[in-house]
Image (cartoon, rainbow, N blue to C red):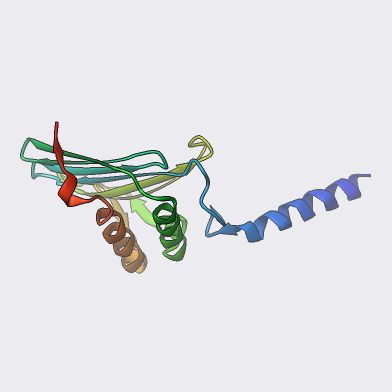
Length: 157
């Protein structure tokens, strides 16, 4: 009986593996979220982009002047974003933390789904550094995400 149970568990696990792509489900989960944060370090600047299926928001602080942009991405745009994360192996990107770093800015991205019970974060800010082997993928992801917020629809809050 234990052998049958072990076989069933193994087959279930093996059937689950192909549905994953780099630690991500094969298709975009309905409740997929993405949070991007850029910190200027010593400069008084930050940028935040939050993406969900229902709404998106971009906040940029330039020397105390807050620019807020609300926008919505289509399902196909969300799917394209998700595919880009898969292609650039977001969940495989390695970064290390440690040591003292003073006033270093940088970027941090967190993705989540399943009511954020499944989450991945990659951090290249403060005392965390993306490994050099992943610079191309990391920069491609950063570039893609920062181009999503429409610059012509900025609302001042």
